[in-house]
Image 1 (tube, rainbow, N blue to C red):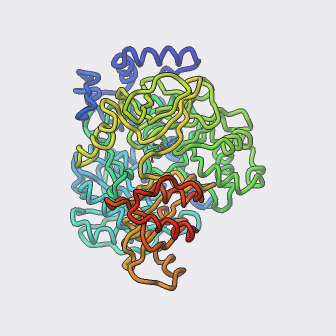
Image 2: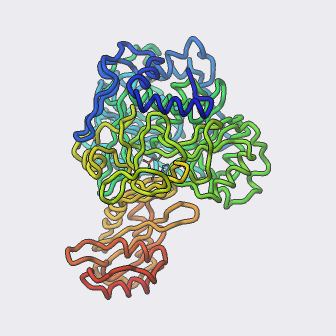
Image 3: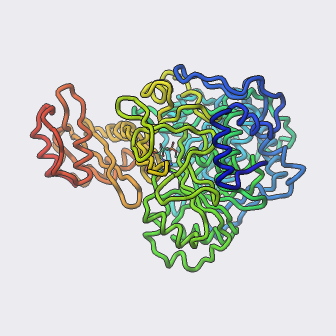
Length: 630
Ligand code: WT7
């Protein structure tokens, strides 16, 4: 498959993709296995929105991830699995083996009554079976909804409920670092409030003793024994749903972002090959959990579509020590390494003694994803990990975009510390001013939008199309709005500055402040709360919660501990506030709206310049809050 190999070629491809987008994407799509070719490349309207790519085309993405490679690379390793504990055994699956396992598990799904179009929730740690489960769902035409293993039973239950899942795939338990996560117990709790679920398939991973419910729960391994490794792929329409993935929004309710089969496949493959300049036989490692979009697109689908070897890592960057990433790179001779700024910052803070023992000479390309990378971290990554020899691709994209949108192309286009740089072919970014006009020219700043569809753009939010419309297509008419602010410098390079809505990026995880507030408010003694982000050296943003207690509690320390436990239970440990301040009242306007602008300033420690507080119902409350800042 063709790949961009020079800056001139990038410019040509870009021009072609803008002038004749349909011809451009049709050429890319030609390279896949289709059961039936499409009738029409693109039909779209951002007002509705309706976006259809490759209409009339029929395919199965797993034929393109697996079957297509059997002849040419059947014995090549598809997945390398590095377990949580480096002393445990590594597992490797060739394309042939992965194909057989996926087909066998597709039969297991069918035997357990899963049908095309069903929604299946996958709640698993980073084990090869997670990739197998995803691909088996795609093979039978069921829609997978992977929920990140860090979410609590309540968050899992909300997501199962919203998608109307009737089946769950999980494990008995797993370890992350020194922590045990009781996956099956969490599912048992979630199912107390999710009557739609009829079947739970449990992969025996740790041998932990778990309760199995008769007629509902079955063991993965037992079911696999009953099944053959032959399963002809279900034929899907290009616009049939492939998966749902929940992401946080401005309201307390997460949004089920929907991606479809054809467009997602074409875009993820194209971006994987080009951005990372993947060469045959190289080992690619994306450290993201498959519970997030990065893991879907660049741990599973992208690499497998390209016939790559992808490394899945079960553990954490700091177990058994802060050298684990670097040790793993040497151990498996990783060529392309893709991680998050928050991980880079925490490993930088751990010190060079954890880096020095390792050669890191297999590395060729480094990637960054999920949040802005500050210049200090960029230089550290470049110098100590890439040894100033590896281009760093700072990739900007979102759950909703399905694949990388703005990014350098490794070794082909220029990098600039802190900049995601240039749009990939097919992507037409636009910066908008407050009045909704597009800002033309360079050296400008605005809200980041995209003005033309690309194949893996969000199609809908599951079960609530209007929410998709309001959220992404109404702020700026005729544009997809990203929710980010962005600068375009004198050379036309893009630098994403951060979110402009009520979501915060905490260690690379997008969390809705309203969702965290809902979790906090479950504490029986609290009346209300307001959560804002503040800049944090390692996490990017930390969580600062202002809480109002219904009656006086003198045992502040205990109360704070209880609040943290409440959030862990109702949302998950990653949403735990870093700072909690108990206040008498929240600063509200006369119409009852919380003035978050003021709380943000207080959380940042910027208390001398709070701006206009005259519209507050009671401006004096600000003094109290300022004085009690933690
Ligand atoms: C938000 C999307 C990208 C997939 C994983 C996260 C922020 C993402 C960058 C980057 C600056 C970035 C944006 C975006 N973001 N990548 N390279 N530079 N900011 O997907 O959880 O949907 O989050 O992450 O704010 O809107 P997500």
